[in-house]
Length: 214
Image 1 (tube, rainbow, N blue to C red):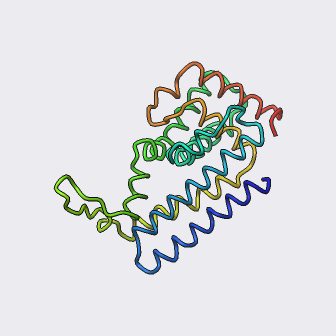
Image 2 (cartoon, rainbow, N blue to C red):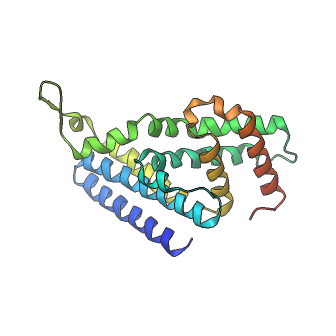
């Protein structure tokens, strides 16, 4: 990783450390919020790493600045890529059927997290810990009171996984960038069986298998 990516990851670690302190002292809603912010910073680190490393060649300004869901979605791409590799590690020849199986395995591994991001649920959890909204009658909507220790622990665990993701090997990041670009919203599922995605996944897997990609 270069210095810029390392600095972003360090900020993700700082937010995660603060989230743990808050959770340990019973402030579960804000712990969840900071955990989600940490996940977003890890996602940002991945985007910058992909751009600076040539894994993405297009402009990523919108991904970085137009809301937070794109950065949150990257954790789903990470799980997708891990699912793909787990389904193909013991495969000698990469055939169309292997690619189909790998894409389905990736969807099952990363689809839920991607849905959590794309649906706005993850962002909702983050905002709930920071704000007290009011309804149409100007009555307080006390969503934060429903956030418990279990919620904080789950989001802290996800943030820890996101840091592992951001600091992972290049081979995995190439696959993550492919997943992020080609299937977009993983929870739609059908995208994982599309011809364009299949062909790109197949090509990348072949290159990884043959050692053309480090």
